[in-house]
Length: 370
Length: 90
Image (cartoon, rainbow over all chains, first blue to last red; front, side):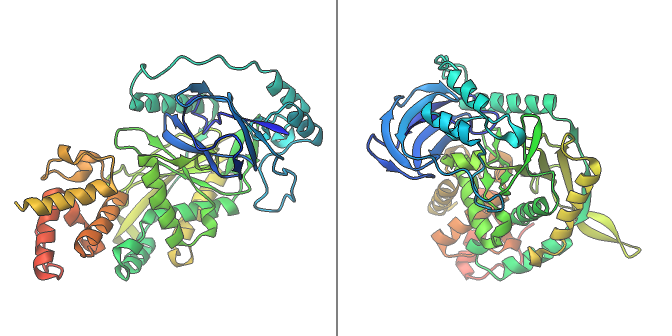
């Protein structure tokens, strides 16, 4: 079976990308997850991974070509990764497609991962396959190379995604102030006993607490697509990383709830370095089902963030600041953190959002258990 | 000013934050105000300094890495004594 490998949409804000370099040649055997090409987007150079196992038959686009999302770039032969698996299996592929639609998609040479499902629960139907097969090849887009700098491109991409979010998503904004002293004290003690290479930043506590709260309280991790909420099976948490030249990108830490804090810290360091230096992987941009933005020591006390479509929630952590705090009738100075949630009101309401933030706060109050 | 110490510090800085141009840095201005240095940058900087100088900067001293000039002063003191300075300038 010949499968078309198309320019992927690495997040809702990507409309086009430039093929920078192929990492494969005709005849190569590839495995799902292998890096097959480098693509330049408004978020920098991304390592794009294969969707499935197979053999490279033909490359259709020369390096240096700017193409719209969805443009066929290469032909692979091979079998699609089986998409039907026990629903409870955590590693089950996300794509759901009817058997008839799968058959037709394969006959048409369409990669199933590139299809948009409009059936119940986002299932890919025959009509979706026909729609994709009938779509005319997109005309070559005008080069944006002269239209502005990389920063300008990133700003435009952020603007487009955020404008779409504000237009389509009714945001609800519960907030929660919490005493961060348990987490701060625990972290100080943890770090004091370790060499600098092994120390943690409090951001990893936030990431893990958010992921665990997502697993416990439904409605905040997933995608809103085709008029309905698709809850996530895997809780991959996007972490907003500011670029020094302006702009930001929020690649995902994969399933942080199941990882220990030291592992998460290593992954976060690596992720931040690549978010600023290039070579994020396509899966890291496609998979996050909720975003965390931590404003850091120099940030504002709180922020009211905008949801990154098609996600349904984003959590903002303000700076940690000493404030008067009432403990058992006494006013004491405490490090206070304000968490703000922007949640999609089509999916959840303020009460669930309050519970969600309360759960994150409770998890942060027992940092040794994270 | 110890030119070679400064060069080594800038080399470390460039290695941990390749998107910073060391030629553009003013030594007396905090890195967070010049190049948006954040807590992750500071931690990476401390890891790099340990690799270069063999000095582990404790969390409580990380603010001494806020600017290049401050970092030089701190490292000079640490390198001279091989012990954390008892009292640091505010």
